[in-house]
Image (cartoon, rainbow, N blue to C red; front, side):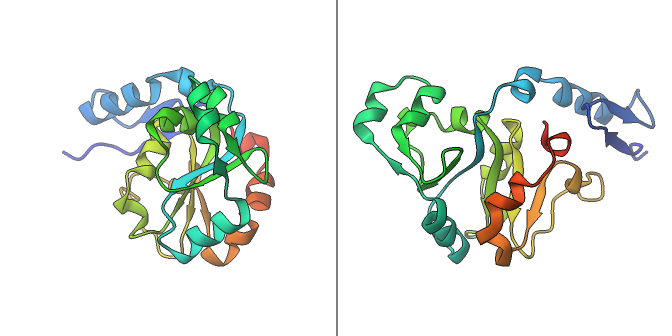
Length: 186
């Protein structure tokens, strides 16, 4: 017997057709897991760390790319302090070219960000970045023209992700800033 439809409302409460269904119970556990992640202070508006292997990634790096001061990074011990090791043209947007060094606390940076940029490289879903951002409570911003979300028959991705066409990538920061707080609270 197929499980009943599952929906999540704005306050992350779960409703299911059959509350005894094992899938529904597992989903409830995932949604209730680590509420601290969903309510923490997030000083960054946007975050991305990816190699510039596509035109859109190179474009984002040209517009908002940050440089990392390795000496300053050695002086820091946690994600909030790690932010001070980056020099960025926009204070609440961190676009890093390449993999974040282990000492910079990649997952801490995800958890310090309201939105996480996910762009096509080899493929949007061929990377763990999308799922790591979701796990960290960071709202995915999918910059792509042809992404077909997994489980779209069960999940309404428009309720928890932002989709931006690649042609609109230069306007990404202003587009995200225009999202009302009631729509971008995790």
